[in-house]
Image (cartoon, rainbow, N blue to C red):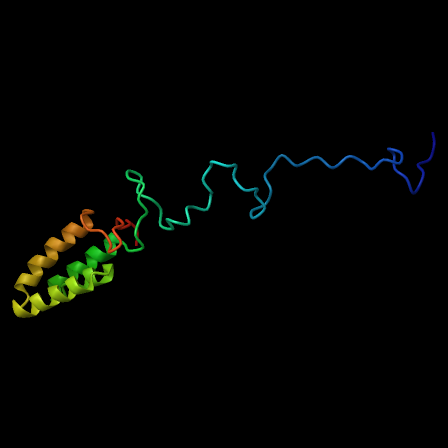
Length: 135
């Protein structure tokens, strides 16, 4: 047997082959970009809150649950808050004025109907996007 020579390698003067890649994926943050034609794993930058699965429209940044519950506060005399939250300031103020003029009766009816419309996806945000489901 011969002793290994220092300063060289067992493969002669050629460098050793590269190490084999492990069978598991690389750590997070080091993934390669997706192939062309595939969506990114991080979502669509033009629709940060997702898209409606039926129509493909991007969701609004406003929540229909929050807007509907704010509109139901009208049962306590503050109708119009849900519309102001959605960005319909003029309509919200009109609901507040109607509540003051009718001593709350007209506002309560309008607020309940409006809350039902908001919660059943009949109302969109001022940009025409559907309201998202989450909070």
